Image 1: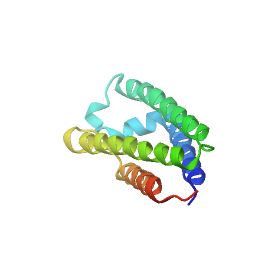
Image 2: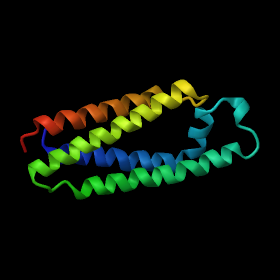
Image 3: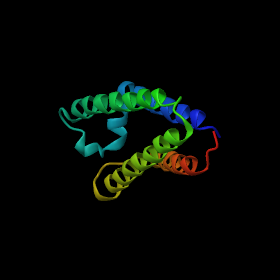
Image 4: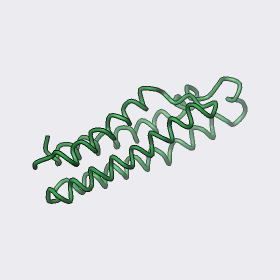
Length: 128
């Protein structure tokens, strides 16, 4: 696959994920925490904390979009570092899932792992 296509795909997924965090913050909060922790203002705080996360995802997507026209070697570097960033997201998600009461959706962790692998693979094999 072309680096431009892969960067566009990852950027678009980031923007969509960000919109999802913003619009679905309350639902995500309720799904991610045990019922006994969702008392008082906990849902309100959890929902509000998803908003900056959503904005950050959208910003990352926009930054990735801005790199689509880079020459091949620079685009490969963007993909390499995108893979590294997704690896940190994956480690964080796994740590939260296994060491805290937070229920991190396995589908999200699977998507993060896929995007990290795609980024690393493309950074080494892309030809254009």
